[in-house]
Every structure is written in structure tokens, then in C-alpha cells.
Amino acid sequence: MSSNNQNKKNKKGQQQQKQTSQDDQSLEFDHGVGSQDQTFNSNKRNGNQIGMYQSRVCSTEFIIEESKGVANGITDAFTLQVGETRLQSASQSIVQQDHDDDEYETDEEIKDNAKEVIKLVNVHKTYLLGLEGVPALRGVNLTINDGEFITILGTSGGGKTTLLNIIGTIDKPSKGDVYICGLRIKYSTKDQLLASIRLNKLGFVFQTFNLIGSLTALENVELPMQLRGKLSREQIRKRAISLLEEVSLGSRLDHFPNQLSGGEQQRVTIARAIANNPSIILLDEPTGDLDTRSTDIVMKILVDLNVKKKITMIMVTHDVGLKTFANRVVRMADGKVNKIEEIDPVLRNEHIRHLDDRVRAIHSGNQKDVLAIREGIKEENDETSKLSSKTKVVIPDNFTALKNVSTTKTSVRKPQDYPVLRERFNK
Ligand SMILES: Nc1ncnc2c1ncn2[C@@H]1O[C@H](COP(=O)(O)OP(=O)(O)OP(=O)(O)O)[C@@H](O)[C@H]1O
Image: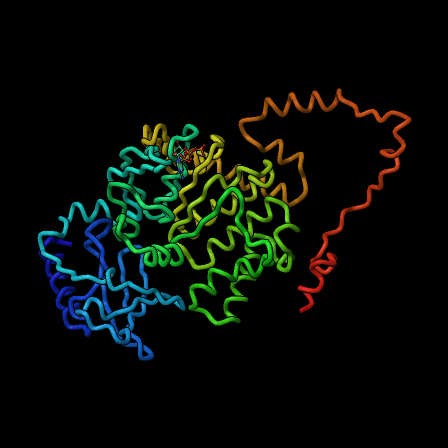
């Protein structure tokens, strides 16, 4: 597109905005990622003024309602509502938008940043510990494109989690610019707006699963959809079931987190994370508590979400073996990005193919195949098999208790099997 056309488009966009009943009112956003394609429109629906913020890769819908009894200037006369959650004091998030033609970027720049979903420019984060400041990030610059899989590796205390929290809007930078889907996050950005971004744009998966213990797997997955308030009860239930089926937990819907293994809990967390169709999933050590088998299953789900559904993945991990599932590896130390490594696509595809083979073998129950396929540890496998052929477990005669151990299969227990839960389940 020529810059003339772009300028015309921008001007037209500005005129259209001026013609709306929300003349000159817009969500606050600065010109950052994909700014040339950001639009703000509003129209009336069911008596509510609906605002739609849209960039090339993201969109967020808001209900703007004239609030009652507030008349201190036009920017104070609105309350921002997202889904069912009325967001108070959002008037400060709705400010004058005055685009000047010269604020738009050139065609070259448009091509360059068309797919950026995250951009951090000289980001600092200092935590206050008593009277002392703890510098966690010291000038981080990073751009992540739509659909990329990024792994963040680095030294302990290097700032990986802090960086993830800032990208996830859980924390705000002390200094520097953060753009998420084109929206600029500042220290002054209202918590309500951040909550809306989290609910609509981001999915989270943590090492510790963070499932709500008193809710079943199904209820945990339903929760973000209920908070968002866009689907009916039936639609939410149907989608939650299908998401759990997608992560092979269709038979465990009514199970509580403490009745699931670590790997299964993590799969529930992933189903919950994708419930609202996020553009980006943030993962902090998602396989940190899992054995290799569960790690493979979880990684296969994550890689599929990235490759097939084009969801951007940003994963903090200590497991160097996982780095080849990413497009790029960001290495952090002392609060800085000290290296960014591109993974050769051929190598990445090969590793993904090996992963597919291993997971297929796991599902077919052939653990021997899984070990044989596991690349990079072949020699170790050889050592292990030598060891296992030599090593014999001898049970001493006087250990009768062990000799009489029953070898019947462990049955899967349902909530009804637990007296404490039976009452709740039958309600
Ligand atoms: N809430 C906090 N208050 C004070 N200091 C903090 C806080 N969170 C993190 N820090 C400090 O910030 C620095 C970066 O911590 P961060 O957790 O981001 O590192 P990390 O790379 O994720 O470490 P690890 O790999 O050990 O999890 C560390 O020095 C840490 O002690």
C-alpha cells in the first residue's frame, strides 16, 4: 500500500471516528505496535454504546455506558464495562484521541511491525523491598511477533518471571514502554483495563497449575468464559467439555484437581487458558513439576496450539531440552536480555516430529518405543538398558508383606467415591 493510500485511509478512519456519537472519544492507546491499523469504532447495541478497539492482530470489545449523575466534562461521563464486569473509574482510560498524519509510520515500518503482538522498549522493573530497591529488569528490549513460539531461558533471578508478569499485565514496568497488541501499558494504566486485556487476550499456565481446588475440571475451564460473559450457560458448558476432550480429559470432567495427576492438572490449566480464545499464552515453567512422559504430552498440546491455531506462546523454562520447540530462544541474565537465538526451522520440525512419535507411543502404551524415540538420550538409554538387564530386584524372604502385594489395576476414583465430596457432588 502506498503512503498516500495509507494517509487517505488514516484520514478516512479519523473522519469516521468523528462521525460517531462518541466523537473524539477513544480508549487511551499510544502509537506502538501496529498503530497504523488501530481503529476505534462505536455503535449502539441493546441500548448500550459498544466500543470496538481493533488492531491487525487483536480486537477488544467494550460496552460504554453513560453513567448516571456524572457530568464533569465529557470524558467523565462514561463507565467502561467489559462483559459482565462493570469497570468503575474508567473515565480516565477514555481520553481525547488526536491522530496527526505524521504520527503514522511509513510503509516500510508498517511492513516491519505488521505482526508484532508484544513490544518492550527499555523496560525496567525495580521492586521495593523495605527501603531498598531490587532491580529485576534493567532495560529490556524485545519484540515478539504474532504466532511465534518464544522460550525464555536464563540464570536464576535473571528476571524471567518478572518479564513474563509484565507482558501478562500482572505487573507494571517502573520505566519503559510496553505494548500489548498495540495497546500501550503505562504505570498509570488502570487495573480494570489490564484485567480486561488479561481476560480477553491472554492465557496463563503456571508451574503450580493454580486450579481452584473446590471446582471440578469442567468448572475450572468454564470460569474464564463465565467471567467474560459472552456465551450462554449451555454454550460455555459445551465449549468447556470440548476443550477438555481436546486435551484428552473428556473422561475426567467431574474430577477435582486433587484427584488428577500433575500432568492432568496442567492439561486442565491449558484448557482453561485457551477458553477465551487468547492471542497469546504465557507459560511459567509449565513442565517444571512434571515427569518426562507428562512433559511430552503437555508440550505436544502446546506445540499444536502454536502450529495449528497460531497462538503466540511465551514460555519461561529451565529445561534446555525444550528450547528447540520454539522459533526463538531469549536468554536472560541480571535483568537483561543477553542473547536471542533463532532455532533452525528444519531442526524445530524434526524435534516436533520426534515429539509426535513419542506421544503416539505413549498413547499406544508402548513405553519402550517412547524411550527409543527420545532423541539425544540414546546413549543414556543404552546405559539404562544395560543396567536394567543386570539389575535384579531381590525381595528378601522375610519381606512377606511385599510378596503379597496385590497387582490388580488401580481404578480411577470419581468424586462420588470420596465421602467428603459426595454430598457436594450430589447437590
Ligand atoms: N516481589 C518481589 N519483591 C522483591 N524482589 C523481587 C520480587 N520478585 C522478584 N524479585 C527479585 O527480582 C529478581 C528477578 O526475579 P525473577 O523471579 O524475575 O527471576 P527468574 O529469572 O524468574 O528467577 P528463577 O529462575 O529463579 O525463577 C530477583 O533478584 C528476585 O529476588
